[in-house]
Length: 174
Image (tube, rainbow, N blue to C red):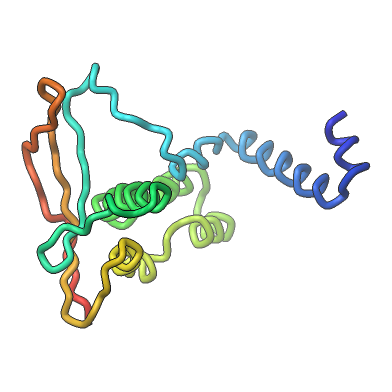
């Protein structure tokens, strides 16, 4: 009934919804429904099962790039994208879809098409730290150095205690 009413109201809206339904049905049929989850921040840390967690930070010329002064949506965007980019670096410049599509499709044009369209371009992804610093309000000039850090911490009596830190990426602006 909804589709019929939508068709009467807007043929363009009907077409968009129909394409979405067909696409999602195909994705479900191919057992690829998990394809959408890596792009959502749907996972939280459950400290009742694990008292350890990981956090990431960006340093520009040895100073932490702060996001707390940004509007909430921008702070959230910067934190979420930092988390995703650091995991991308740690996983040898691969995202979930690289492994997933390699598992679901045999070598061929379809797999190559999907990999090219749905996964990160490695050259452009290398520029992400520059975008991050600029989005956080920091100007970038020649000879600046950007570093990504990974912090491991554990919760103890409602406080986070850093147990380890590691530099996972460094670049010098040319």
